[in-house]
Length: 279
Image (cartoon, rainbow, N blue to C red; front, side, top):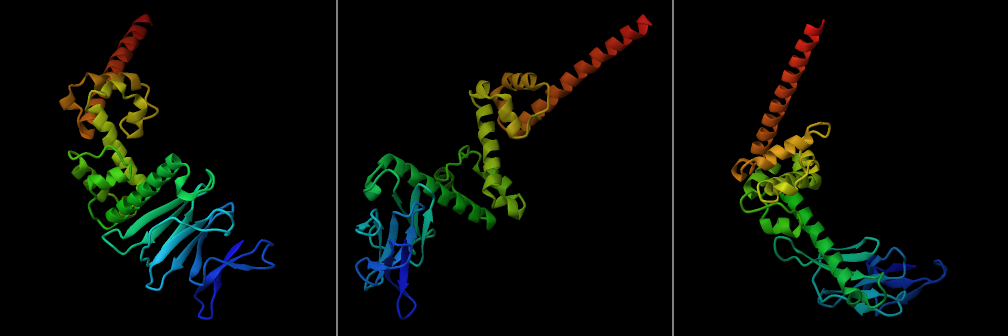
């Protein structure tokens, strides 16, 4: 097990390693400027920060229980450091105190074998994308919480699709109109974006590939509706100009439902007249 040793001023005083459940400890790392930043869930990989004389930081990884250390980032100035043990990857979020979003993301993958960030490049790239997506989604939540607008580029980094230059104003207006607790909830934000994504498909030549489940997902058709096929067919027959907004598609569905209901009412009336005559 690993631990950070305090020095006489209760500040980090080096990294300690115990191989006998804490009965004895050995200092590892170059000197007392090292301190422990994080340990992977299986315990055999550790991450350490070193502080230089000019208060710069280096991030190191050990793949062999602290016997050797490999630098996995350039020097940085950090006001705060957090290590996220996600199960397969470890992420270090380093505060560089630069710009509106003063963070740079460093990561090290450890399950594909030893070698730090140079192993399993494809898996590591996927992990980096996932971490960057999370950061972008957090940024979006924070901006909407504070009634600020979000750029298309940020939506793209967050992998929230369906947002275009044509609909971004409507998307943001709808999100900002939500209750304060909802507009910062990424789940609610995704729901709004998904609605515009589906409507974008309906308005395009992809309309024939849209099935009833997608209309149900965005609240245009009830899951208990017994006329799903007829409603989807009616939407497909509309000219593109009449199916390029949520309101237009909803109006078309309501109109078709009224037509279906009128047809059913006429049929029921005819059956009643025939039944009355038979008596």
